[in-house]
Image 1 (cartoon, rainbow, N blue to C red):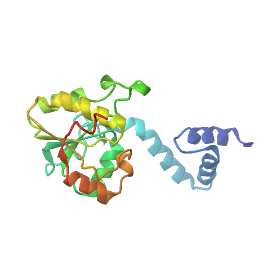
Image 2 (image 1 turned 180 degrees about the horizontal axis):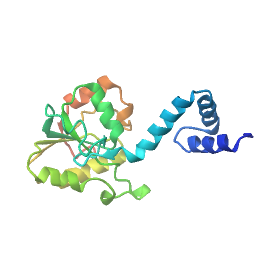
Image 3 (image 1 turned 60 degrees about the vertical axis):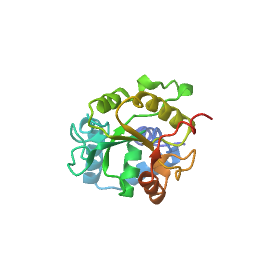
Image 4 (image 1 turned 90 degrees about the vertical axis):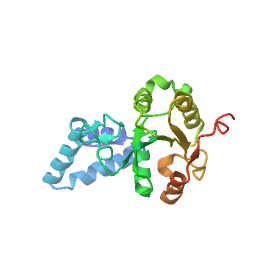
Length: 206
């Protein structure tokens, strides 16, 4: 692709480095930006810069936040005794969209995957265990993707939590095996949360 401007070329390369965006799409985005007003570009640039300087992880659950404690954890109306364990923040967004869950969350930041060199120590697991040991959590919902890696992580968490005074549940299998949580339709996901079941080791022992 012959691009006559070095500045356009650089920006195309940056856009193309994002997941799911090829060079043709990146070029289309850059050309669109060139048509925008200067104040729009400045606002875009400011928002982009603030991603690293203004956004942090919630110290309590690991969700994206503009403050030390995220807007979900700080809501007094949420059930602080009910913790839903998810892989990443996209799953929080998906569950929140169902409007069927009123507890709080814990973000692991991934799942155990030996093939990719990801072990328990690479995930946000220890803070979850400590959170349960403090005694305020009554139920932990394991809401990880219905994949081999998700089931492996569920099994690991169950082993860590089973001897603590907490109820361990999981989403009902309305969520299809192999499906990523944030791609599940809101109705199915909402029903899976409402109809959650006690965690069973049987699906893990394949």
